Length: 221
Image (tube, rainbow, N blue to C red; front, side, top):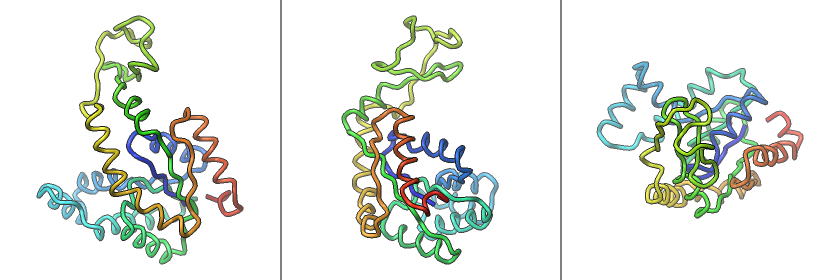
C-alpha cells in the first residue's frame, strides 16, 4: 500500500507500471477513475461530469467515494498504488480513515525527487513518431537519420502541446503549492522515502525496490 509522489514528468506512471507488473498491485488513478465513471454513466460519474462541465473541481467526498468503491471492488488485490491522490492534508486524512475502515494501512510514501531545470529540459524536448509512437528527444535521443523514425521510417513527428517550458514550469509550481505540502503530514508518520527521479528508469526502480524491502511489512507491499 503506497503513494507515489512527484511532479508531472517525474516518472510516476512508469514506475507504477513496473510495480504493478512485479507485485500485482492495483493502480488507483483518480483521473482514470473519474473518466471511467463518466463514460459508463454511473450515478457518481454523472455527478462528477456535471461538476466538471461547470468548470468546478470535483469535491473531496466524490473522489473519496470513487476510491472507496474501487477498494471494495478490488478487495482481494495484494495492494494498491495511489496516483493523483491525496493532494491535500484533508484528503490524506480522509484516505487514512478510508483505509482504517477496511483494516488497511498505508506503508510507504515515495517521492520521486527531481531537479526542476533538468526536468523542464527532459519534458520540453520530447517528441514522438506520429505513426508508431516511438519516443525521441531533442537532446537525449534524436533519430539516427534526421527526420526519419528509427522504427517505422515515418517522416512525421508530433509534440504534445503542453510539453513546453512555460506549461511545465506552471505544473511544477502547482505541484509545489498544492501537493508537496502533504509531505510533512506523512513525514510525521515516518512513511516518506525519497529516490532520485532524475536517474534512469532501472535505477529508479531499483531504489524503490530497496525502499519496499526495508521492512518486513514492505515485503508484502
